[in-house]
Image (cartoon, rainbow, N blue to C red; front, side):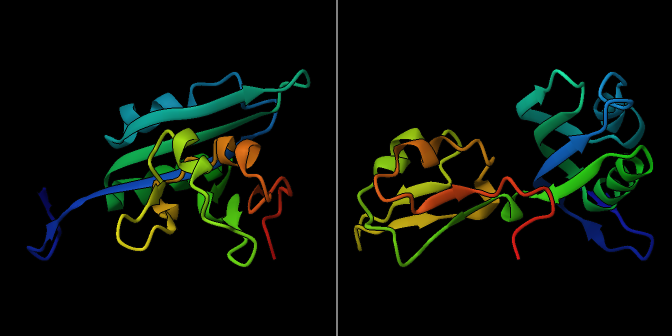
Length: 152
């Protein structure tokens, strides 16, 4: 923990974001610069570069919240679009039958079965938007929003 300007203690911060890179940026070390310039740690959860050289990445970023916001501003200044993962994956609560198949595929444990209620809980803050749950859901209750503008 570190001190804020007014003597308040600043706690660690962790967030999962979905990044979209234009072709002219996908070959530059903008993500590595988050660590070097802003003292942030990152974990690449998923990354792809298309044949056209535009890229997408699901990234878990941790550090101080003020540094996180500085890092996000740096990414935006470098033409990287940042979307919170909460806007990339969602569950249709009315459709979900709470079978639990998705929990077996979830690498981040964002989907877990509540032992008391036997219901599947979805903790969006832990979700990496990998999409594995969408492939096994028998009723398609889990979905990844592929619209680059986010869900309305």
